[in-house]
Length: 138
Image 1 (cartoon, rainbow, N blue to C red):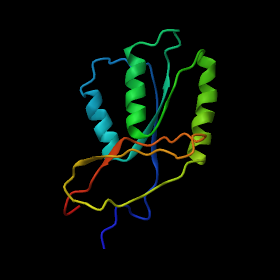
Image 2 (cartoon, helix red, strand yellow):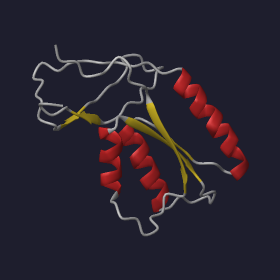
Image 3 (tube, one colour):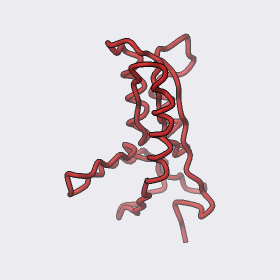
Image 4 (tube, rainbow, N blue to C red):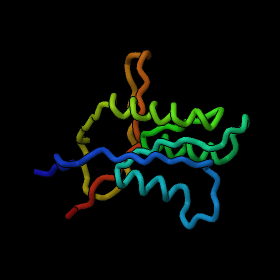
């Protein structure tokens, strides 16, 4: 029987502390997102940019975080960072995991987009934008 997850899998999270600006990287933003999605790793970002106007770096942090099921925090002061670490800790302790198997399941390694929402507007659902299906033989 084919299973998508090993029972000994653990949740993987990266906490990224950055201004989000590209300083001569060798990889594209889209490549970083794909690598995190393939590794089933959520990215929680804390911006080090405390300016009142958020630049392109903040957009990069938001894009990476949202695509992987995480979120980004923008402090007003650097002292706020401790609060954001606490917020991340609380969120990770209160998450639920949902699994499903699509009816047209194919072992082709392709990206599958998912969209998840709550029928109750009082709840906010944070989920990654999709996943990579396993390849045949993996």
